[in-house]
Image (cartoon, rainbow, N blue to C red; front, side, top):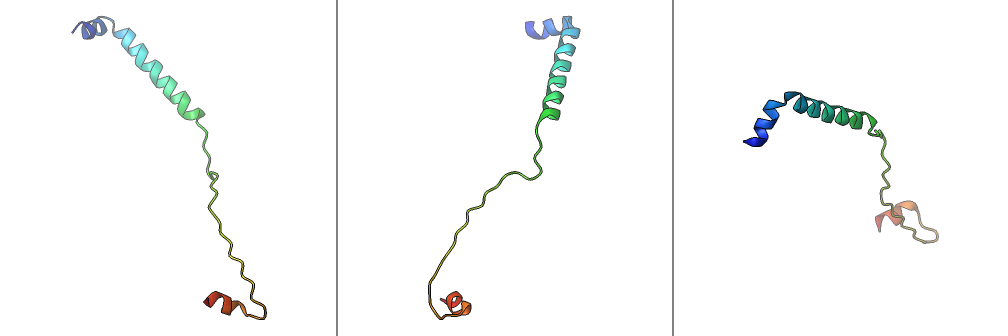
Length: 62
């Protein structure tokens, strides 16, 4: 109860702490970088086959 009593006796201190935290939060929010297209590297795979005199359909069917 002593903690609550000390805040009730000094309401300006509590109000100033709340306002300070709100301002720090707003400054942090507006300074946060926003990237609309984040870097994303998707894994890629390549399959190379050698089959002389074959059509593309033949290699695809295998």
